[in-house]
Length: 211
Length: 327
Image 1 (cartoon, rainbow over the protein chains, first blue to last red):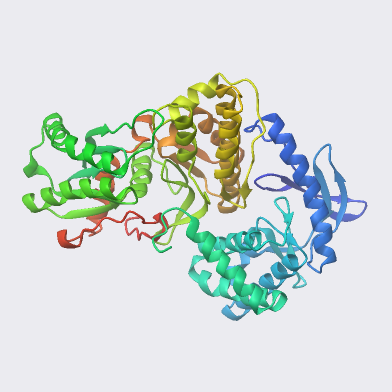
Image 2: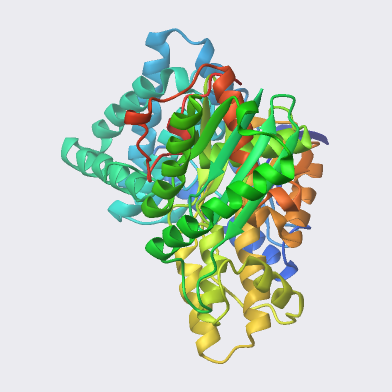
């Protein structure tokens, strides 16, 4: 068992399991928070993540296959996807490839939203481009069911924020490509409404000069 | 080089002198306190600043034993904050700049919090957790600008604590009262926990906490639970940002940085990710003039200044929109 990565809320271990290359996502006890709150968050998120990942797969969004869910140790055992995090490769792509990837990201977000799934933590850290060129979404711990414009807006706003904080040199074009991909799934009209809501939510933030 | 800095964004009016070697020569602050159970009234805060300005200036000069002729630049907090309060500080700054014929330097108040914390702790390239009455943001520097990784989608952590304190008839700022009450809390009450990616939202938590208090829950337990939930939310968002950015330093600054429980939580997180936690010294955690004076030095050395006739305050000025040439 090798510790592959220490995320914010879970530790990812890579190992071989019945001949399969797998990841064990363990939501570890967080010593900083109250034990009651800690257990509640870990259990509800583990359950929700497994459930919604399963649904995402059904709606045509590639996710790692889930093999086992253990609510006591708040652990999900899932397929190991060979590839790179979008965060790590976005800057090294050609402009054309980058925009194509972003459009694909938007398309998958649209597919989730169309199937009443809100991811809840859309960042480029939570997307893997596999070696075969397939885009996977991971980390559904904050996901939920909703068709509300507001929740869709928050979801896309987080994506936009991730571009502007981490990939600032091409944030504008990337996010535009995301919305274009999003529109192919959601339709121009809905996409326009969601993007409008994204701007509206951003304006609710602190110290926005033009409201 | 010596810079005189004027702080007047909200409740505090202050005048401080800082040298370009980073020595805080003097830092005199006078804070307006609204009546218990009330918030800051912008006009009354401005009136307070106006009343104390001559006294504070005199004290700063006497205590520092530095003559006005030795001052090389005048910095003032340009925003964000309460318009009337900002205008009072700006007026004093303009008058001094014109009279002394020295450059006038506009300083973003929150960048002042970050720069003074960096100066006093020595943190290098940190993930900054800025928590105050005006800000709750998780940011890091990149290519000329502070980049926002997460922030509050509604009220700030300082707002949350102040408004809860106000509801219980304490005076603002209420962070330290809440902290000492929380210390005596025993029962953990369930409150809404809202994390959206790296963002947090506290307005629902405030409403729920006030409801509980009004329904007869012990104030100590309410304070304890509010701290536990609100700090855990911020800590989770901070940990996400830390895992994402892989920074090796975390810098906690702003008024709420003085809270021991919050410090403890962020300390655990930083250790988990092999990062060092730097905490702004308590005396410099709240609003103070040294933060403006020191940032004034950095800005002045990068050639930033403003003509008096263009030196408008900006009560709404986002931290991530300010170009930083010195980092």
